[in-house]
Length: 452
Ligand SMILES: [Zn+2]
Image (cartoon, rainbow, N blue to C red; front, side, top):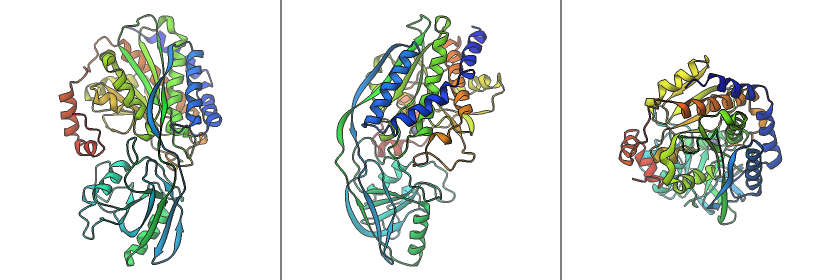
């Protein structure tokens, strides 16, 4: 099917309107942080629903799900020995509450598998852990795995150096949707270096305290809407992203950018609705930052109709000035097709098969569905403005938002209309085998996410 004329109309709609960046700024300024369980998130979800209705999408609605809401309380990190000092700290969401006074152990140069094997042993101590890998260690290791391995090794507390220099305090949950077992606080790279210098000379004693309310049950929402030109039972393409952010910034990059790209793509697709041969569903998830809660619920709730889903395109951190990237989640059979799509417009993007179990495409991948994460790689001129207080609209490129929205819209048409679609849904055994081959089974088991 030749979709050239349709694509031109859709891309023209995106490139000739200022909607994407204006919507991003409105979402960020009007609701502030969209942390799961807060009024900020609820307001944002209703605002997105209203936009989908304005754009003429059909079956627009909110899908509720129950989850634990976490609320930030004060954190304190004090050095007691060899010097007395107050160290700025930020509680990591879903940390345990309480006070720990213990010796500090530097695990920044230790592989996560070896946290318990350290000659001195982390048992009963506070673990000082970095988001960076020790030299020569190749595997990507998520913060949650580091935390859970420290817990498993018997650590009494968790100090996390989560960002680069600049006295930034990183945030990020330490479990998937439940309260953790030991206090977890992030400190700056500079503070971690200082503690490291002291540790080189001898024993360091610290006191870590995390205060706050117990997490409480709330109802969160995914926002859903659909657009098609009449084929209501054809193959479905899902464009998605997480609408929630962390609580310390409005999450302009993570993930107002991805949400707005989805919104802009479906706005343009709706403008050509009568001629649209593909069936496209927009889903904006809640609770991603607390452990993929909305997408996990969605996949469970829609299990009976997932066979109709042809592909899931998940936009997460998609508006930085860096390179456009498509990470096919271990779907090598789709690489050529995606590369061809980009080649036809000489797009300077990167297509790979990189895999991450830490964004909303993952529950779909677990269900055997073809999926890709759409993002922008690299941070030219921006010091990692994700998961810290600097994640504000000035770090998002208006041009990149339009470009990513255009790519999403175009891919939705091409994937939806493909007459020789090369990626069949995988059976659970095959999914399990591939995750094992990728070396992900231990991490997923540790996080209680191994479904096989
Ligand atoms: Zn994100």
